[in-house]
Image (cartoon, rainbow, N blue to C red; front, side, top):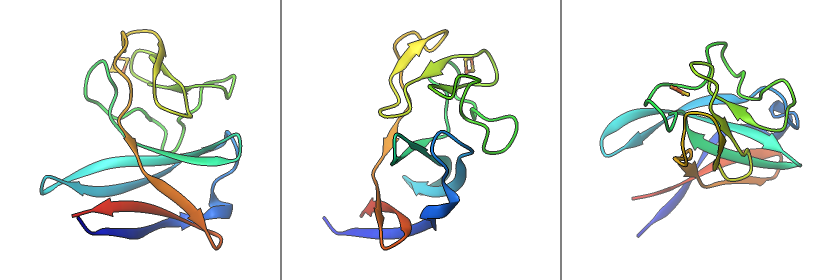
Length: 116
Ligand code: FES
């Protein structure tokens, strides 16, 4: 299985616990919304799909963190997710977490790792 890296953004575009960057990826021949945030210095990416109802989390583009900046929040009904792993930590996600995507930071850039 081949693995390739796809550039998402510059590392400096991601501020710790700040605004996220949206991007698209192909999954099973479908375009899917995804996003990347920085938390405790590391980039973390997920499909942009709530565990409660499969809608995107951000009403305002890139606004994924809640007011505390400790959790990712779904703007529809307020489900909370841990930004390091996407696990549901409260609200209507009821144990259904976000789907994580592999990313790497290297040479001042953030890359998505894609497999064929
Ligand atoms: S759709 Fe996200 S919490 Fe309901």
